[in-house]
Length: 306
Image (tube, rainbow, N blue to C red; front, side):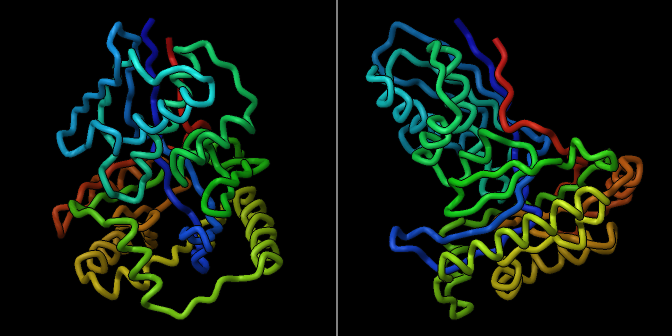
């Protein structure tokens, strides 16, 4: 049996990072959105005794460092079977270290694909718990769509009406991909060094979470949500990278606004009219070797076939 999975990238429409937790992670509040830029996985069972991973991008590790490998191990442990006799082919379209959760999307795709391949049926709560063991962004990448995320990323609340479902949500993102990588841990370290940030009390976080959720519900409904775009990483990353500042300014000149996704370096802008997004892409002139493309919001994190 062969199972194919499309694994969709995510962007952060809103991202606040709070103090470091006792477990070493940071608490976040983020509004995440799946987009149609996707990696693909092909999974099949073999007679072998291990996991065999291949990838179209030679820079992607194909051993236990890969979240596909980790996902297989977590799922196998849950059902009491060996993580063996498995071959996975990854076709990589999501840039590495781009703030688009490409590795996490692959991990989520592996969980969903292996459930189909191995004939497993879990409650959503169980699968999300397993996803959190694989990586912080993996739960969202499994759920997908438009969702508010908190904790270290393991608590995912889909919005009642997402951007795809909104009556005014027929637009698209102009996504800009600079040819540089930003290490997530280094970005968090730089953010910590750039400010004195005490861990918020749980009650304070919940108040901000509810306010963020309510504001975004209204903004999605009336298509005014670009005014709420925010990313805490911008200040610290831009202060140390004139190149990223230049790319951000360039995108603003073409689109009127720009926002960093995750810990960068990918950036995006929103157009309510797809034709305007295409026109902005066509007139976009890169200044630092970046690539511009039109990305559409999607309602799923993964798509399993076969």
